[in-house]
Each structure stands twice: as C-alpha cells, then as structure tokens.
Image 1 (cartoon, chains in turn brown, red):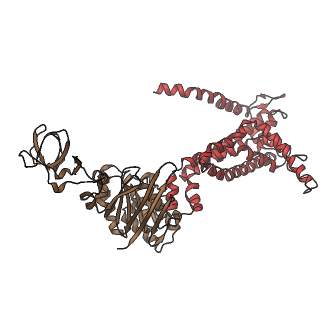
Image 2: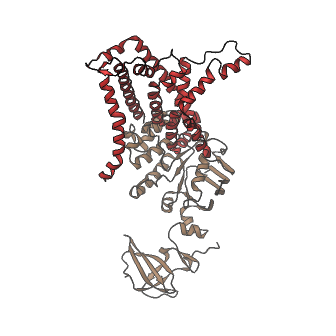
Image 3: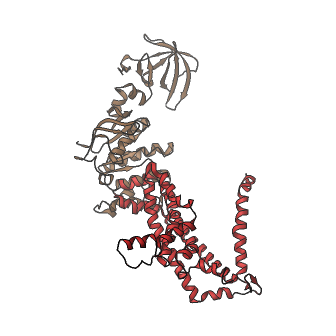
Length: 316
Length: 275
C-alpha cells in the first residue's frame, strides 16, 4: 500500500518552547494510525500542522503525492474532528454536516449527506441543534461533518476524551468499524495508551516533541525500544534496571531456582485475574497478574520469578 | 442566602425605583393632565395631549427622528463590526485600542460637539482649508442639517456599538473558526457563515444601545442640526421650556418610551431566535 501522508523532518518552534522537533512519519492509505503520548508531547501540534492551523518552522508535509505545508487549511483535503467537536451552535445537525459541501462541490451531495448521517446513526436527529444532543451524539455529528467531504486523511484530536468512561469503550469499537467501513485514513491523537492499542493499525509514541518509536501495537508492547515507550504502554516493573511485564511475573508458594521471596502487600480482584503488589526482600516493589482462582492472601510470603527471555533491557 | 441576596439587590432596586419607576409614573400622570398657565400642570384629566400627536407636523418629527436614529444605528454597526474585529485580532495591543475607543468619554459630549461645530461651520477648519486651497469658492453647508446630526450621532454612539460586538467576538470559540476553515471555508465565508451569525446577540445589543438614545437625543440635533432639524428630543425639551406645555411634552415622552421598549423586546427576541 502506498503512503497517503508523509511528514519529513517536521518541526514547530513556538516563542518559548519547541513543540515538535524533526518528526518524520509515513502513513499508509486506509490505516488507523495513532499519535500517542502524554500531554505536551507535541501530538496535537503535529495534528494542527497537518490541518494547517499552524505553520511549521521546518520540514515538509506531503499529502497524496503533493506538498501541502504552505497551503491554507481550506485548501487541504484533510478534515478534523476537534476535541471539543466545535459544532456550529447556530446550525442544525444537517446544517453542520452540509457546511463543507458548499465549498467543495461533490457529486450526489444530497445522497452522501443521507448516507453519512445513517452511518453515524443521526438521521432521525438531523433537525436538532447541537445544544440538544448528548456528548456521544455530538461526537458522531463531528465525524459525519468531516467524513462527508471524503478527506484523504481524517484527523481526530482526542475525540473520546469528552465522553464518559462507560461510553468511551463502546465508541472505540464504533469508531474502528466506521474507519473500516469508509476506508478513510484516520490519524488519531490520544494520550490514552489503552485506546491507542485497542484501535490502531500502527502507533507512533511521542515525547518531548519527538517520536520515540513507531510500530504496530504488538511491536510497541513487546519490543519497546526505549524505557519511555516501555513504561508508557501497559504496566511495567523495573527490577535492577530491567523491565518485566506484570503478566510475565510468576508467583507461587514453592521456590524455583531463580525465585526471589517477597511479601504480598496488596491484592486487587479485577474479574478475570488478580493484580498483586509484592514487596521483594531488599525493598523493591513488583506487580504481578495471577489467575483469579489462585489462592493468595495479603501479608503472606511468596516466591517470585520470571523467564530471562521476558526481561526488557534498554541502553537509554 | 436569600438574606444576602436581598442585601445586594436592595440598593439597586431602590435606585431604580426612584430614578426610573417614580419619574416614569409622574410623567405618565402629567401627560393626562391639562396645561398650567405658567408651566406646570392642572386638572381636569384629559387625553387631548395624545390626540394632538396625530398632527402631521409631529408625525414628520417622529419619522425624521426614526430615520436618523436608524441610519445612525446602521452606520455604527457597519463601522463598529470591522473595528471590533480588528481590535479582537490585535493581540497584545487589544487593551490599548480598547482604551482609545473609550477615550472620548474623558471629555464632555457637549464640548466634543462644540469641537465638531468648529470643524463644520462656514468659517470652520474644513471650509477654510478647502477655500484656501482654492477647491471651493463658497463654504460648503456642512453644519445645521440632517447630515451633521447623523455625523454627530454616529460619532457619539460608535463606542456603544463597538464594545458589545467586541465582547461577543471575544467569547467566540476560536475552534469554530478553525473548524469552518477546516471544512473548506475561505476567510470571507468564515466571516459570513460563522462569525457574523454567532455575533448576532452582540449586534442586537449594539443596535439597542445606539438606537434608543439616538431616538431620544436632543443635544446633538440642537447643536449640529440648528432650528431646522427638530427631533423628538428637541420637541420634548421645547414643551417643557419655551412652550410651557408640560402635559404635551410628557405625552411625547411616554410615546417615545413605549416605542423604545417595544423595539427592545423585538430586537432581543430576534437575537435569541438567531442563536
């Protein structure tokens, strides 16, 4: 598959800080790509550079074979779903969805509007104003408004953060299904690693304005290249400078050859498994996952071990 | 809680009662009484003060006042909107420009109108300059006409249009403007399709703040309009002073007040409908 969006050495320097530094990325057509990182890592600025709301200090942006970094936002065939959704309060759902069609005459506009409203299940509420909609409905209108223009890339700026946690998981699946159904390339910005892991084909982890590592969710989780990526995705124990995932930690009452003794400080029952917090002799604290059926009691002494193969080592 | 609320609300309520409700009631009563021999009012009760208003002479004054106030309102909004937009986009200079907008209030309106008279009169700065440049022989009739009154109204009330429009522009969610551009709207389309409709409440407020006082103005028309351009305000003033017909002056005031209130409600309702 060819790349639809390519960033080459993209940088953005604000008056007081460096928001994005030398970011290079290639995103395949039709992919669900996530930019993941803590707040202030430069992921939203990267998105705004692609949308055209900010001008890059250096670097190039290529979209579908042409360079777009000097074009104003209204000339770029990308559309944005804003964190706050930014729906026009004076227009109805239909008015919002039709907004962009006036500026980019599309064939069969009426049918497209009907189709996209059906896709996001808002057909029966098309005459409502945004103020009469729930958070989830607003988010779907924001999606419809952008998707109706058939963008080369849809930019999504933390679109789930305004939803309540119950809804968020459901919307994740809907969003992923919508992306498959429409075939539009999604560039999704989030600080929620679980969200990124669950939905993305590929993820780029950002920190301090730079990309730490890019890859499939599995690659990033199993073969993190930096300590930051290892800590940011999933839970990680650090023992003697070596990383070990909680699900790789074996806990038993019997001693193994390389096992270390420890005392169970806390047990959390999480349905399918238990999450143990164990204080090793020597003071280090390690967490482990065990089957829910496993019988452990808080305060008892257990033997903790893991396979050397599961250890993650980093130079930086 | 309610007690605290009462403590805060009472002074304003008392002030409103004695400065608005009571005087309005007095005027209302006066308008239904007969004219006293040396000013003032006398019994018996009558509605004659209102029926006299049907006279085309007064109709003309009302129409002229309305047209001038409406023109001043339209001009203030037409000039005020771009100015407010400009101030809103001036970044760190915003506060400087805002203080320039309200700077004229530091001088009495009366004095500023005299300044305009010095500029506009036959021997004023403009005419003298044009004459000495040889562009005109006879001085232009710049003062004592409707145009001069309109100029004075726009000049005097422009800040009242700029400030409410500026306030709504400032509260406007900037991501809405970005969203419009993102959806393909050029800057002019963003202005027409997003900024302007969302500013409707500010424009409505500006319209009320300019139109109502412009409709009742008397000092501007008195100084810049001369005796030819009589407006409702001058009519009222004349009745209470030279004409010594207080009941009629009161009746004109009441009609003016009713019109202003009705207008305010209509504009406000329209403004809400737009949002």
